[in-house]
Length: 277
Ligand code: C2E
Ligand code: MG
Ligand code: MG
Ligand code: MG
Image 1 (cartoon, protein in one colour):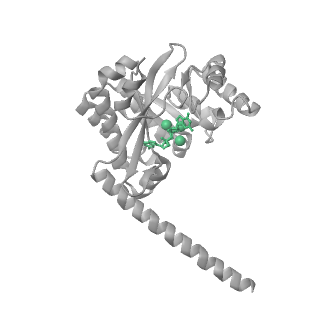
Image 2: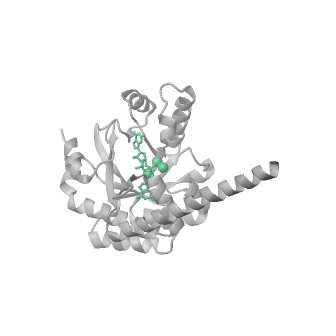
Image 3: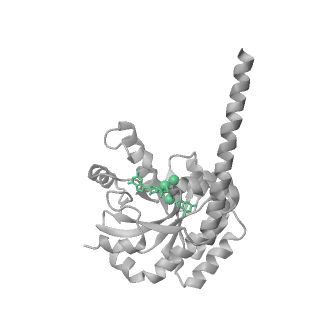
């Protein structure tokens, strides 16, 4: 009896695994096609500075709406792009679109106070030999100032190969780009390393912001991250700010840079005009 059960279970698992793999392959082919057809779109989420009471920067967030499957979350297709190697092409598409926005919508961005755009990097992209030459070539092609670009890296990417990460970050910094650590607090980067990374800014992960002011532990963690960053001479930005209370709390702690639905959602560039008051 137990044996039968075990066998059924194996059959069941291999069935779902099979379906999962088929779905993945299907989605990967679609993503390849979407890239070829230029179907990916880069949205911008403006970030607000509480000290100056205005927007000052924006994060680029890639969007994919498939004709049949509809909206596919970036967490899903970015992971897929990493596994399949499509991330290099995807990363280049995003970087180029961001540089295009910086040039094409210079006046609109300026009128909103947005001085530059942050681009998320995946590990495979960041550690590739071709990455630095590519960044330089694209900046050159669009005549974008390196100061207008920030790159976001997660802790896990930085801890994957610390020395090489520092090398590439140094090159980006020498070029004039800004650097930030994304989703801070969810990985396990040690404070000793944080000090060695040539970064400008720490992005406090949304999970620590979400339950403020109700969760006392999150209040302590967010305060500690902000205090530590200040001592290390780093800026902080809070992700996922959805309420006035959260914004007030962060201001009181000395975290002046805010990203979240409370100030602005990710949107197509054409919609940025609606933010003007
Ligand atoms: P991330 O870099 O941490 O981006 C922030 C995420 O939080 C975005 O999710 C954004 O839409 C969401 N968000 C912002 N404010 C709020 C808020 O107030 N409440 C809530 N609930 N969410 C908020 P999104 O756009 O789904 O992107 C998910 C992740 O996909 C990103 O996390 C990033 O890791 C990755 N990603 C997005 N675009 C790119 C890209 O161009 N390249 C790479 N390599 N990764 C990307
Ligand atoms: Mg990010
Ligand atoms: Mg993040
Ligand atoms: Mg994330």
